Length: 281
Ligand SMILES: [Zn+2]
Picture (spheres, rainbow, N blue to C red):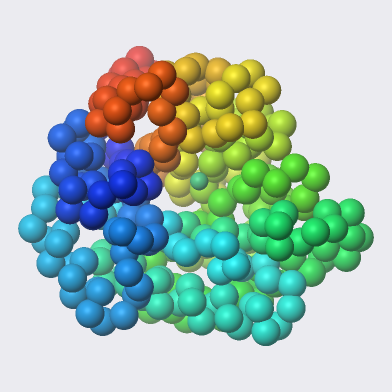
């Protein structure tokens, strides 16, 4: 279980210490710190000191961070929005550096709610330009802190840049040590993409995982336990070996399926992951 990790989003019903207690109780050595309340309250110096002390006193390590999302994205569609996003995101990259994290997950594209017209023919070019300009603005902070930024595929069907192939093309010119990709399995499922194809498309630029399942074969509800087994997890495991993945195995499950408690869900997910990793060895 040494390279496994669990998103703190699973226990957003309690404070960060209680969330870390629950995650370590089922055997995870690392977490992805989701920076939403009630776990993280900003990226200022006071919050940095609080988080440093909190992790120093806990057996669970902070491995990665999920940056704020919503309007705080890389592919903002105008300059004012882009500056606002970078202004919010850069302090979180610095916070991640001060906590010794390896990656910060950032959403590359706006949600469908922020971009009403998916068919706008200029959308792809404007998003790509926004992502590049934002990455250029963040690069000095990325290089100074040694924290890699990873771009995640998002679950908006019919939108450009919602998949690994499109995102890889945009990040190709950036150094691998600074910019990478993270595959979110449920999001891939929701836009009708096979995670196996997505893994191959990401290839050696894949640096992170958000592992969870969808609620049925053509499911639209994600963040369920992989024990539901709608994805072909054996084929997925073989493909990870094929592309030579070395990043963390991060569970991003947050929805119960059968009336179980969050503690029971965490236990099930941890057990499933141990079995899946062992089976593949
Ligand atoms: Zn995700």
